Length: 419
Ligand code: CA
Image (cartoon, helix red, strand yellow):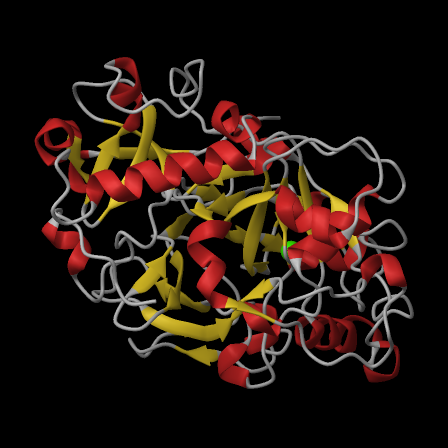
């Protein structure tokens, strides 16, 4: 599919994240208006809360944009998702007779403050990148025990905290935690010394389920995707994780990009999961391409540096399990899934050093410092560092992008401030 031209001229640029082909969903405010629902087009946002209130564009029989989140819209189901997208695409297309009615309800992105685009019901994080799992397993347990025995058969994960999910631009405070290195005789309580990023995609569940679902049904339940940074305290993690897995190491913050890129927009970029060593059991088998070809990049900018440095470039297509397989697995024991559930993919790493999605892997556990373009070195994050995760599916002369997923590290709280 080529780029679809819009009467919003900035949407026709080959390097905008938000051409008419994308139309991602967010929540924004301006000096004049409270937080409301909007759709990105080029460097503008269409205020769909006002379009609905004025009767210019109704998504459903009852109002769904009178709240500052997209959950009510998601609850209307896939037929409404499709008809709303089709209407909006037609209204914003070059030559549309609706231009004069819509134009007064465009807001410049630079005048907008972004919020979480949906109310996060619950948050689960998976561990489905094979290169990442082998690398981390090798560092934590040795090469012979790198992949847990279940790893090639089920997408393993843990239940995280919805309250930890924050929107891009939110500062992230270095956590305190209990640490014990291999040479320490006793644990100690200190600010994390090995604070890290995890470059992931987040899948947003748009439909309810209250029992097991097939992979195909799970795929239809996924409303869209965001980029996700699962900030990770490696020293806390190494001490606490056995046998119940991550807890405090993953509780500080999970930053997501502010725009929900819909599965409809990503449809042209579907791809298969990689070849498997073992056939999956029937209930988890691939039934078609359900992964996506999305280029991803992480950058780091130290405080005072005049430009960011690239940490890695990778692709979502390295995942061993699709979000549909993860969601289907999640439902098998009867766990109800809700509109607004967020599923982290797991860290996305490829086979090359330049494609590794965490500093733990790039610096190989801190043993091989990373030299930034500014000449500084890093093993893990320093206070004042700003991380940005970006990504886009690359089409023929256009990109379906996600915007920024950005966070700056603040120093740990002084102990005297809370004891
Ligand atoms: Ca993770």
